Length: 144
Length: 144
DNA sequence: AGCCAATAAGCAATATAGTTGCATTACAAT
DNA sequence: ATTGTAATGCAACTATATTGCTTATTGGCT
Image 1 (tube, chains in turn purple, green, orange, yellow):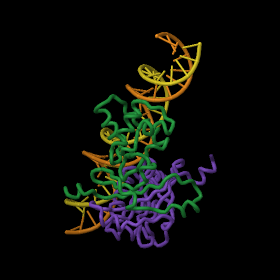
Image 2 (image 1 turned 90 degrees about the vertical axis):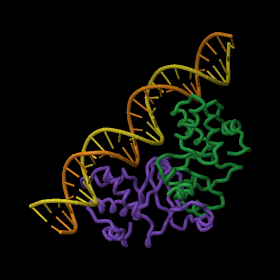
Image 3 (image 1 turned 60 degrees about the vertical axis):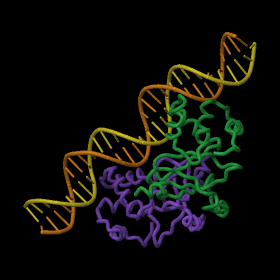
Image 4 (image 1 turned 90 degrees about the horizontal axis):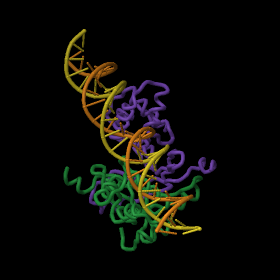
């Protein structure tokens, strides 16, 4: 995702031992400018290294639990994964193309939401706010 | 969902023939103050009438395609369904409890987003904006 | 009313995404 | 080198949703 990120440091910063597999998964997630599904990540890794599907799922869960990867829902069936917001990387909404399944990051300022007033009155615990725009991407529009 | 809604009329308003099953599915979706999963809807219907699981899925797809029911994604694995926004029923964000899976509707004004500027510059087609708040609901908080 | 065509619903099989339990391997500390 | 702990692999399994095909229902026509 960005030149500020040293993935090894990112792992140690959340007190996770660095392993080959974790680093690989994190690299695939981080080096993409858009979020990927677990399947995408697995297929990408499989091309160059030997890794098990289950390991990918487990590592993704782990990275999400430790807050360095973000799990995003889509209009479709599978979750997508991207680097979690951090100092160099603001929270931002995503666009999901219903036709091709591509998910893209939108500019952080393109759609913003004020959560303060809700936080004050909401009786439960709020962990995150996810904003997703669904539609048809420009490539798919062209093809129709 | 509300006394303004006559489900039969709602069906005909989008040029769908009224069938027993469609009406039943729409009633379950509409009479709930919070969105339900396809499984929830099926289980509810099953208690009183004979209906097939697949029929429920197909009717939900149909109602979503015709714009009277809204498909919502969750932090979890299944989609949830609620009445689609209409004149009496503004678009609104939802809260999803990661622990019990309950999804609730939030006040339409609690979180709002301005989509105009994005629409102007975004090269694809925008169909909807989904805002979901994830966390732990007050009931689950109590239990912990 | 009775028949036909079209549409809806049912049923079984299958697909997809993710999860679990247990065996194996790797690695750090001694 | 040995041992204990954590990570990974493998196979089986679960939950959710979808498909292909059959059967039932409905609405229009004579």
